[in-house]
Every structure is written in structure tokens, then in C-alpha cells.
Amino acid sequence: MSVTNFPGGSSSASTGIPITKVTVPALAEMKRQGKPISALTAYDYSSSRLADEAGIDLLLVGDSLAMVVLGHENTMAVTVDEMLHHTRAVRRAVRRALVVADMPFGSYHGTVADGLANAVRFIKEAGAEAVKIEGPRVELVRALTDAEIPVVGHLGLTPQSLHRMGGYRVQARTADTALRLKDDALALADAGAGAVVLEGVPREVAAEITAELPVPTIGIGAGPECDGQILVFHDLLNLTFAPAAKFVRRYADAGALIRSAIEHYRQDVEHRAFPSDEESYHLPEAARKSMAAAHKAGILRKA
Ligand code: KIV
Image 1: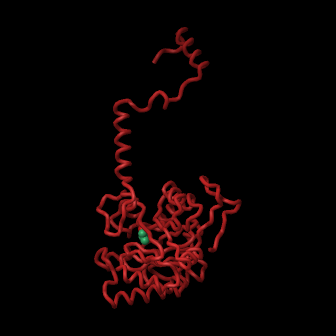
Image 2: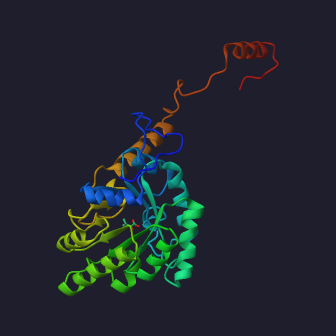
Image 3: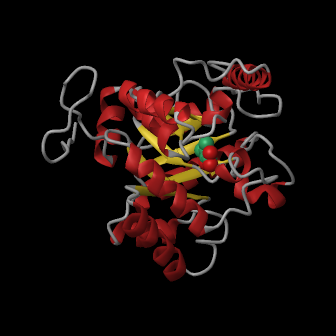
């Protein structure tokens, strides 16, 4: 596995074991060794830090942040500046995982030169270690690779193509479209993509592409044969306000946990049960005595 340790020998707080940074070549090595790649979306410091410490290999600052963090209806509205802002927060939290920034809608849909200039911002201004782009944009992937910017491709159900697709629909459901998808994946890999996300495609199609692609596939709604799996952080923890898609597994109900904790806090405030005396600061003994003396002498008025 290709490894880079943090300068100064970064180590895990809990085990003291040196941290081995995940890189794009390391993902390829994981595929070669048949080691599944765990990936998750990330948008802020605290949750990214938890995900990194939990050992997730790849953290994607997904443009899904438009929906799950910013409350937009789809991913289209999020801007390059907003994505940069969140990528910086994630970067500050992460020691081990590969940090990939999603390029938002419109930031690479014009000329290759514009796409390249925007991708450079993610590396230079936010510390991303790779960028992800949707669709079979082979020329752009080649240009980014030539510019030393690792690229993760994204094929199948590409949410930025929502209006063209006419909804979030499973893709590549016919032999023709499945073969086209495989050709696109191979072309992306050939152009230099370090991994390819396969979203919303039949398991059989993803399995065949995974078997033929020289670089890892990361699946979301694409079955278990992909080299890795990715989920949206808020889906995994039930922090969304909509029914889960078929491919989502909820590993915890953080929504219920957070709601109940906040309700409990509100009730405690309303009943003056928070804060307690132990949760309050106190005057030192000497100051308390001089205040009492001052009150006695009539210098201070009692509240
Ligand atoms: O933005 C996103 O969350 C994605 C996925 C692959 C999960 O692109």
C-alpha cells in the first residue's frame, strides 16, 4: 500500500499507533488486495473527525450538502465557494482518510479550462486531495490528471443530471445502456480517474464494471460487488426528513436521539432544573466573605 505518514509521526489518540494516510494509489492497492473501501460523505469538522477516527477510508465532501445541510431541494444550487467552505472544515478534521471534494453543478460544465481552474481551487484553497466530477467527461479527467489533480469519476444516476434524467431513476437497465456505462467507466479510468463512483445501477452491471475496471468502483445503490461503498452521512444516521431509499441502511437513529436530548434540555430550562448548583461557577470563599461584609456594612445592596 502506498503510504504517507503525517510529518512528526501522527498517531491515533486511542491506540498510539501511527496513522497511515489513505491516498489515491492506496485505494488502487486496496482493490488489488480485495480489501473493501469504506467511504462516507462529510460536511463539517466534528462529524468528519468522528468518521475519520472510526476508520473510514474516503471522505467525500459531497454536493449532497446542498440538500442535507443547506436544505435545498436538489444538489444544483450549491456554489463553489460554499463547497470550498465545507471542504476546509473537513480537511481540518481529517488525519487519515482521503478527502475528496465534489465539484458542484456548473463548475465544470463549460470549458475544460474553467473546470481545471475550479478544480485547482479545491486543491489549493481547501486542501482537497482529489475532486469528483459527474458524467463521462473524459477530456476534463485527462486535463485534471495532467495537472496532477486526482479525479474520482461518478457514473450512473448522477444527481446533477436530474432534469435531463427526469427524476432520480436507476440507470443502465438495458443491455445497451449497461454496455455504454461500462465503456464510459473504462474511458474515465483510461483518462486517469483514480476511482469511479457507481450510483443507482443494477448490481449485475456494477459487478461486471468492477471486474473489468483497473481502478476501484465505489458503489451507492450499486450492489455489494463494488470495490467500496459510500453512503450519505445523514442517511446512515437518520438525519434526513424523508423515507430512506432502498439502498440505504440506517445504522443509528441520531435524529430521534438529538430530538429527545433537545426536548429534555428545553424541559429542564422551563422547570429551572438546568443548570444545577454543580453546573454553576462559585465565588471563592474570600470573595464571598468580603461581599457578605460589604452587604453588612451597607456598601452593596442585596439583589
Ligand atoms: O454528493 C454526494 O453525496 C455524492 C454521493 C456519491 C454520495 O455524490
